[in-house]
Length: 299
Picture 1 (spheres, helix red, strand yellow):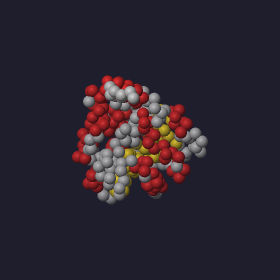
Picture 2 (cartoon, one colour):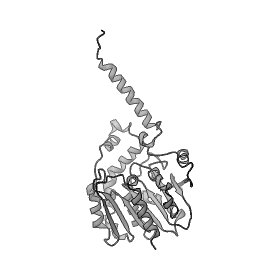
Picture 3 (tube, one colour):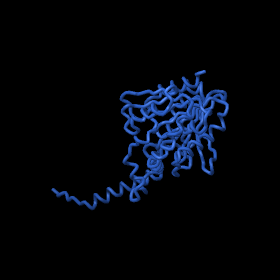
Picture 4 (cartoon, one colour):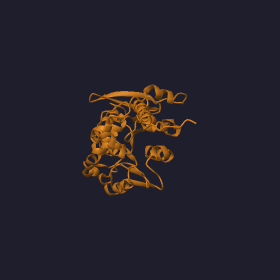
C-alpha cells in the first residue's frame, strides 16, 4: 500500500487558488445572487425579470443629483394617492423592499418608491457619501419630482432610519409620517461590526466588495453624523412609529429608549417585538404594511 505523504505546500497552493477565485467572484459580481456576491443589488434587466408575470411591473428610473447618478424603482398606480418612499440600510439597495411592490393591498392604496442610496445599488456605486444630510437631500430630489402635493410616508430601516429622521428635520411639512424599522439613532449605542475593519485596513481593503466598503465608511462616521441631529429633534412635528426587536444583534434595542427620550411623546408610537432580530423588512412585512396603510389612510 502506497503511503500518503502530507505536503503542506500543495495544500497552501490549493487554498490560495480557491481564495483568489472567491475574491474574483466577489469583486466582479460573477455570482448571480446579490447576497452571495455581496453587491446587494440587481441590474435593471434583472429587476424587469423579477417582476415578469406580475399584474403590475415597477419602472426603473434614473436622475442626476449634483453630478451623481441616482437610481430608484417606482410603482405608480394613481398619482393622486399617497406616496411611500423606502430607504434601505447599510449595506443594501432598493431591492430590500421589492416584495412590497408585489402586495396588492399596498399598491392599490399607495404609490411606491424604493431608492438606491448614494454609494449603493446603481447610485454612484462604491463611492461613499457619509453625510446623512446629503443622503437625505438626494432622496428629497426624487420626492420633489412626484410628491409635492401628496401625502408622503418615509420608511427607513437601520441606517436608513436616521436619514428619514434628518429629512423630516430638514424639510418640515413635507411628510405625513415616519416609519422607522430598527433605526440606528443613538450615538452612544453604535455596535462595531468586525467585517467593517476589513474594509478600512489597507492589507484587506482591496478584497472587500464595494458595498461593504461603503457600509464601513458610513459605520466609522455614523456616530458623529447622528450627534449633529440631537438638537434638531424639536423640529419634528409628524407622527413617528419606531419598531424594534429586543434581540437586535446589529442595532441595539437601546435605540428605542433613545427615541422615547428625543421624539415628542404625543407623536411617538414605540413598538417592541419580543425575540425579534434586526431584519424587520423581511420578517415583519405584514406589520409594516399595516402601519403604512394606517398612516396613508388616516384622514
